[in-house]
Amino acid sequence: MRALILCVLVACKGNSASPPPPPSPAPVPGIASSTSLVRVDRRIELLSILHRLIGHRAYTEAPATPYVKAVDATFGPFKNHPAVLATQALRASHSISWDAPLILAVHLDDQLELVNPGELPELDPRFTGADVAAYAATLRDFARDTKLDAFLDANRPYAEQVVATVRQMIQKENPVPWFDAFFGAKPNARFIVVPGLLTGTHNMGVRATLPDGTQEIYQVLGIHAADGMPTTDDASVALLVHEMAHSYVNPLVATHRAAFEASGTRLFALVEDAMKKQAYGAWKTFVDESIVRAVVVVYLLDRKGKDAANAEAQQQLNLSFRWTPVLAKELLRYQSARATYADISAFMPELIKAFAELR
Image (cartoon, rainbow, N blue to C red):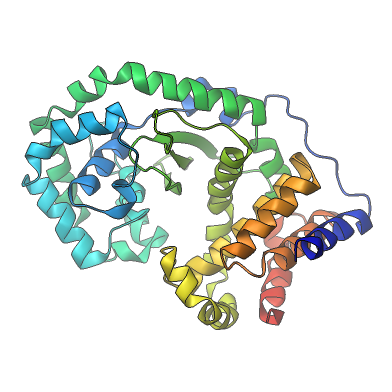
């Protein structure tokens, strides 16, 4: 199987007609050009703390770092606070779990007031009918009652060390030019990388549109090392690229939801048990993840070489994303034919057709 993956990827790359060279890593507007775009985010920490208090798996599997221990000691006495009870109720009534709490988090301003809340159900149907205004009021009360800001100030040296480590990785990798070249530039986008101090092995991509039309696109990267410091190896780069890819892929699949539904439903049924064990419980999420993982393979082929791409494809096969090599081949075909396809949107009919032909 490993040889087959390599053959598919390298043959496709080798036979393409004059593919564009990998983009230059020179600084451009994006993640690497502004130190303010890598940060620990108060809103994300707040929602992570609340979901840790209700025992939500995505926020309780971080290693017992000094920061995690401090969170438990400081906020544990508030487990019956109205905001905690409201968090539990919102999870029970609307399945606000996994990435949904962080989607809500980035729709709050510095005063924890809602920003563009009408976008929430557009981004995620779980928010349909949810009283997020009432919930946001409990968040403000929780931040005040628990002295959240004093806690974060006390832990600022640790947060700054984490941010400096992540920033160094991103400045070295500088992935935004590759995404601009591959998908087409997002002129109104601002990419923000956030170390998730409580999310452990869980990484999430979320976004919000500001009133001026700016899209803030967040890549939340979990801290899973016992010393509480982020890892910066090639696997960490792949995770960053994965979360960035969601900001491009998810809206495209949503736009073509009806066209993907039949094939997505059929393929999801073939791997449903494995997907649900990974918290991917619906066909649309499965389609998003399938394309994103193929994007990562293509990125690694361009930036790291065939061995890294092959290893990534094999890892995805092990996770039951069995069509990753085929989808990567389709994306390489798109990449080599940019004279025909102005951007990824123009290629979507071909990708929809490819999905329909998968078996």
